[in-house]
Image (cartoon, rainbow, N blue to C red; front, top):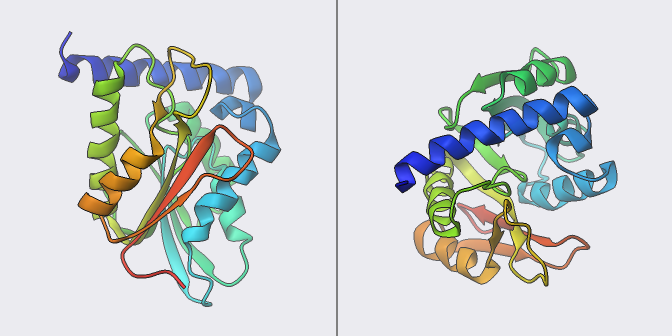
Length: 215
């Protein structure tokens, strides 16, 4: 199987996996692969450090939005005002659930695998973690290709997280990424302004990529 064949098959499997999770658990942290609300919100806190708290309005792309949980978190952040939230997912069931969780005036949703709209900030929370049968090399290339495309649609920056390679056990269907390699990729190919966060109580890391220096 070539990489071009493997990725679409993987995405179909991922779509079916999360649709099944949603049917079993409803719109909750467990339906998007997190064990509890605490770890879900901790990821949002790290990702949202990208946002300037200068009182300005901002718009968001949430790639792999699931049931839209990030909307509520961002909407409650002090120091900035969310004016538009664009959620992307490959699962129609997840998008249908997200519509029930988000303000319809300030949110819209796009079914598909690509970010198509410009926004101030783009976020990718957990979307790259499940690779199913894809090889690490194919998935690594897929992740970097999409990060480049998402960054191109982000006026102020992009933040994403990945499972860390600094573990002593790995599940075969998950992707564990070297933080040093992705930091280097972002510095060389996206922006000079890159922050790596790898000091929190989860087996993962977060990278913030800004177009301008952060305060």
